[in-house]
Image (cartoon, rainbow, N blue to C red; front, side, top):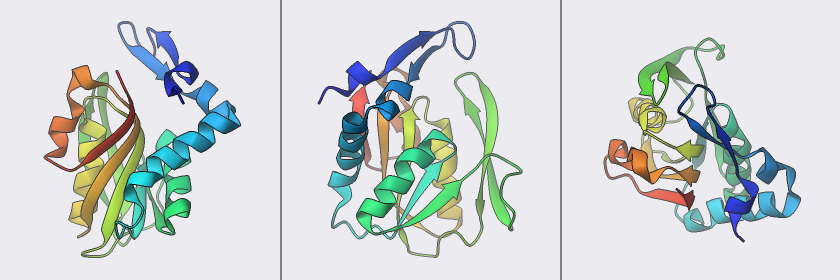
Length: 170
């Protein structure tokens, strides 16, 4: 299935000069969504993944489904101020600003094999910050998975050799 047909380009969002890849049409189409979930899950079947971590907010859509399909737990990585328990924090630079992520400090345990899922790999700052949070909790980051990868921004370089699985690459 050609997932590009379900991804809409929105120029100048969230600010001038940014070309936003809108996945709303993909989410709306049941067959495209099911295909996406299966394609994100397939490479990790039988890989001993015990938890799937995903980054707020669109990553939650994909990560929770991948976790369910793998028979693994789900770990939310959220924006600051959203988690009620003790947490770890990591700040990072985005393509269009700065931000931070947080995780409960007991969300994963030492040695646990975790798969990190998000919708887009762009500059790699968000994924690198999430990866660091998982490592700070003692987890083994087994791999990462993304619906979209923007190759020209070279985000995978910030993941320091962690395997990257992307369904659509621009």
